[in-house]
Image (cartoon, rainbow, N blue to C red):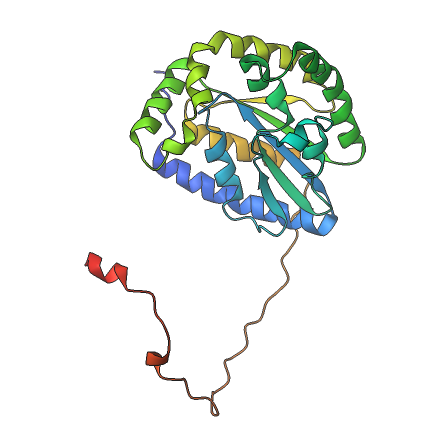
Amino acid sequence: MTKTRPKRVPKAAYEKELEKLQAELVTMQRWITESGARVVVIFEGRDAAGKGGAIKRVMQYLNPRSARVVALPQPSERERGEWYYQRYIGRLPTTGEIVLMDRSWYNRAGVERVMGYCTPEEHARFLEQTPIFERLLVDDGIILIKYWYSVSDEEQEKRFRSRQKDPLRRWKLSETDVKSITKWEDYSRAKDEMFERTDTDEAPWWTIESDDKRAARLNTISHLLSQVPYDQLKPEKVTIPDRPRADNYERPDKELYRYVPDHAATLY
């Protein structure tokens, strides 16, 4: 009898595997820091495809001194006059650093193309220049990994409606997001053209099915670990000394300080 796979990864199995993979991410980051490697991970996909949740799980236990998320707002007036890639170049990693891009220069191939925020000429130039631009990054030694989160139209609409009702996530639902429902096929055509022109041997696209968010997060981290050629480095041994006696110190009276009201005490 064939075992039927559940629609979602069971929570207990998900949490156990996630903890193991996140521990391995910490090991990977230690190698990146000590080896001087530079890593860029691009997260792209339709609105509500689960990119943000995956990025949060990747970043959760990493040292923020050498790992950061880049999520750029709309370009300023000055940035609109620059070479398109210019503002992204300034956010690329230095030695020993990993950068996670919550959307990237591929805005031009997706939302800008579909919503008419760029001209057909600018879009055509982007598709021509991007493989060259990414080849330069890879040739210079940057490890470039590109993920596309694929979500079904039914699941996307379900997540939009969930955000609409949730005051904590309402900010995630922009006017552009809502319009994407009516432009599903336009986004599909734009994505197909983007893949055709920018899926190269130097910088391939990796697709992640994301209707199951738990599975998408586990698959993302597992694959990311496989794309960075890191070694298992033993952390330096840390010895915590005994605390010396405070013979010559007397703490001032608490009444001299301002304390935050104990809101937590009102809950029990």
